[in-house]
Image 1 (cartoon, rainbow, N blue to C red):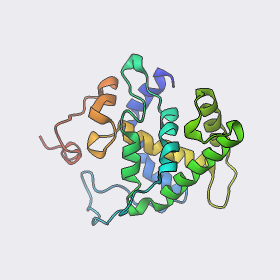
Image 2: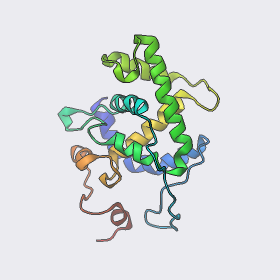
Image 3: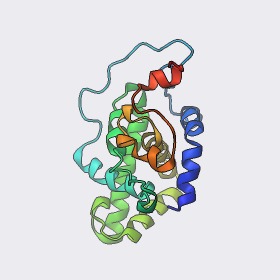
Length: 204
């Protein structure tokens, strides 16, 4: 990914976060917006999944996928997605009961990528050693807007990318952007010693 892409992502992080939930609902996902971030009533807490949202085979695919989507840039000090904790963020976020439809589509996407990789090289997506082959499989998914029931590969891939960007650019409190390294690389002056509630609430 080119440097200017990352810089644009940094500048637009707040807009992306605010628009993600509206975009999801516009695509038919019955999700709730995040809990109050400084204004408006908070939703009551609900219990998340008691078990891991993704089985090991799916995680073995999702990890490499995230690194294809957000490969980082060593020259800028930007870590790749997994190094930045994006897989942990995605896993944690997917435990929320309101994200069940999204979780299901991400699982189907992982299986779809594995099937495409099997057809291309005879191995699962996470076992592809050639970055060009990884990019090819992901590009094919991005171009595939054919519905398979309710599952659309291109839409599921965009959902995954949007959540990945939330984790990559968001507050480390939520599990991604490990140690704030992405903020540091993009010179985003967000405080690391406060909780997100304090940041959004404007408390000194």
